[in-house]
Image 1: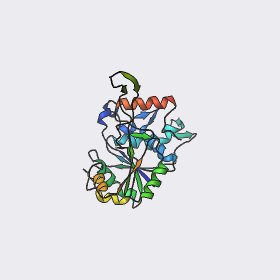
Image 2 (image 1 turned 90 degrees about the horizontal axis):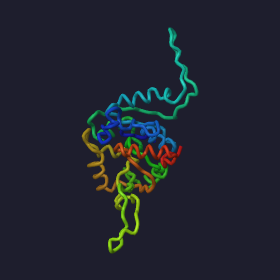
Image 3 (image 1 turned 180 degrees about the horizontal axis):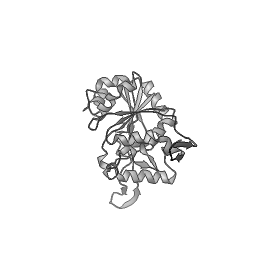
Image 4 (image 1 turned 90 degrees about the vertical axis):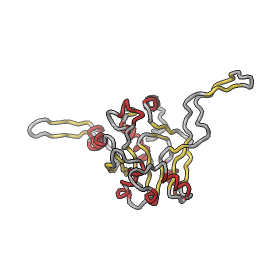
Length: 257
């Protein structure tokens, strides 16, 4: 099963980093967050990736074109008969198709533009800026058991602020650190999709999260996989620093490999 990753946005809310490179190439622990996402899927045996490019696409192309240089020891013989020798060659068992989907194309349009690479088969899709300890195998099994055109992973994000526990007389009796959400579930990406979803996308300016998902829900064709474990996006510099801190602590929940 192929995995489509949306990696073409401008990343304006993390412009401190994204003015130099696309958001999926911003590093956590010395590796692009895109790499972390691919490792999550690869752990479950999914190695065939289609990456939708847009903003600063050359950065992602250069990364994969030179992947073996980043992962191995290299000797360069510089002379008339120049030669490059790769030592301790190490690379992932990935097939990576990089597709130019345009600078201003919306998410639905990007998905539509990779249809010829997906083929007429079930595929997965996620965003290039969020990591999770999601069980991909369980997600796929749930999708198959529900028989819908689409399954979206739903999660309750961590609250941003801690809470005060107050007594009836407004005395503070305790504290609660950053409770999970307000009971609402949000779209966390990590979709499983049938090729029938392409019929719900009209063109390049279609936002997948708007009309296509709304129509799928209205037609009873959208299932939810409730994920109660770790999930965190990298929308802002604060998010980036938070994920970096978790990684450096050795307690990154998404690192199963």
